[in-house]
Image (cartoon, rainbow, N blue to C red; front, side, top):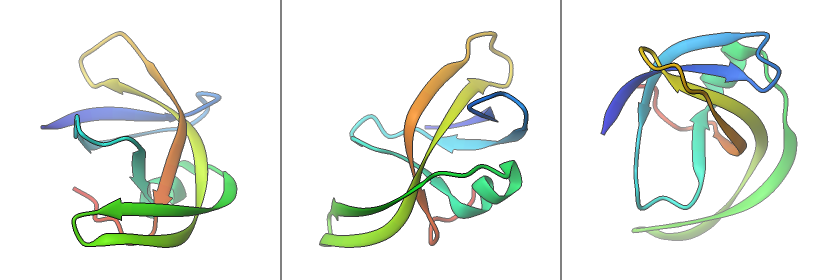
Length: 91
């Protein structure tokens, strides 16, 4: 499912309106490097194993904390560990 959302930095000082792809089978939250650049967010550097249909591989990335809410919804949800993917497409 694709939904319009507002993504905030963890401290709420910046936000970007964008779209999210919700995958109920995913065990990790991902976002694009472009979104993080727009938010001017910083995160801890990590080496993460990613497993999918094509197998498993390790990537160098970062983890950031974000908050997200539906554009027309009052509730905001905390995403304490979001893996930043440089090759992830923007919707």
